[in-house]
Length: 245
Image (tube, rainbow, N blue to C red):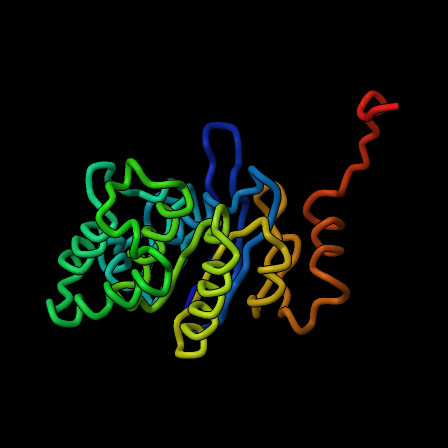
């Protein structure tokens, strides 16, 4: 469903993603992990057609990300790093706009919008302008927009950041159910326990390169152990001045 072949992105002399090759089968939840600046968001932007690779290619849902970005966007749902919301549209207007863009019939759109607003606890904010919403509400709105068209693949950049525990639980259940029905999920996250709970494929990137690509079942030890060993070591800092005598 997602197939990367030597995917590379450079910004001047800096290489953000370096010769990345990866296969993510249909119905997989793939968690892409790594430190800030490791190349996770750049990878998502290339796989969703928002950023052209410097070299290499990838196919998503059978479509080349470099040759047919318009068709690609018809088949995928995206929660981008910057959320991509309009400040002067309400939560509900964002969802209605998404339904219109994807040509979803009015009756079906109404049902989906109501279900998403309820499931993601957006009822109180449905008529609030995005510019006046909290970051968590904005994040949930962007996720609802990604889910609404019933995509073949979902790309979610830090979906659980700034989300309350109840909504986080709901989101995890939605993603697991979606994957069980054949939707491929590619997400980035810094929240290791959530990634370990729901992901069936674990990828760790360091300095733009894949340093771990493993089935969750085959991972030796805990995800936290693998992350500290491969992505960035934990640091022990002693602040002798901190505290009261």
